[in-house]
Image (tube, rainbow, N blue to C red; front, side, top):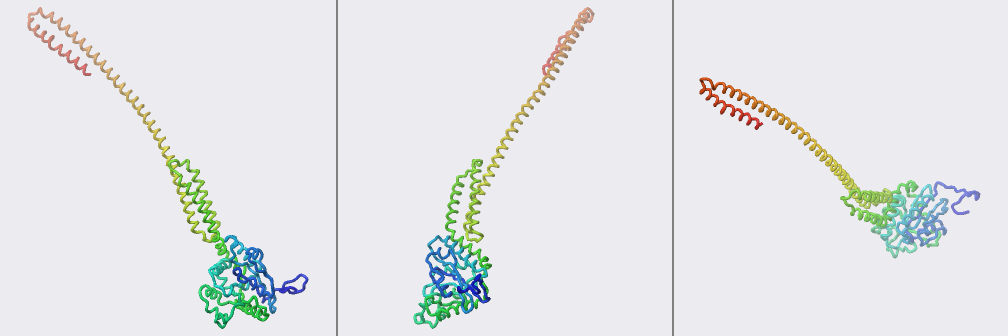
Length: 431
């Protein structure tokens, strides 16, 4: 019967006792993660491979019985390979970690973070820890990790000058010291090359004791889901160079076409501006979607938003120019109407004035005719009166008072009558 399986062979029923342990191996590729899993299981199950894809396509796991305690060991993906693009590597690691979490629905009692003894803790190691925190959550090291240092076969108190491995750890500085402190001094040295059964059992015993001291709070799928925001962040960070390149290319093309817009012909520019507005909004929508609400692409989003605003400002200015142009055309037509109306009124007023003047002229002409008629009547009357006087004169010249009558008649004929006729003619002329 295979280790870890209990009960009758029929049906291969798995019995999970209360004191079972579930462990997940994590760490940088090449640190001996798979070998550590094999040591815990007591047999060669996990195969080390330099190929990132072969390690992470399928999460490996198996079981072991240690003094009645069933230990499930899951070999997580190695981190740090560079045979693929950064984005592809991140996606593959996260996808494999999802499978690792799904492989144990009840969760894990501990993460075994595997590092190598005898080599300098590098910036790459630091970035590996940072990546793991993004995958599993910022507190997973402090709350769920045990630091397993492989290469125990090369540890020598004589070479280190320390009485024990614990003493050696206490002298460490820099990033490795911070890692030990973050793990709350939960560390163990593993010799995966030893053939000594007692040493192997003692290593596993010390490891189980460290796991038991983790207060047995499992890291479950709920913890993993809570860290999704951080996982999204690292995926977005991996795509930043590509997103920058694509966004800058599209933004440059938009700005280039925007610079050719002229307000003196707004009706010809509207179609272009609407097209640029759509492109700019599609660009920022794409970037926001890729950001996954992580805030990683905030700077790119802000820069792109400024381009959107610039296009919208230009579009608004062009729309205003069209409105002004339409208003000017409306004013032009109104002015033409008013000028035509004014000309019409002028012509109508001139016609009315001409009519009034004609009426006045006709009235004056009529009055002149009447006055002329009166003058003629007066002339006829005076002529008649003169004739009467002459007749009377002729009759009176035979009278004895001839001289007096002669004098009076002469005065009347030579002074009074001509003066009166001249006055009337002058008055008529003035009229």
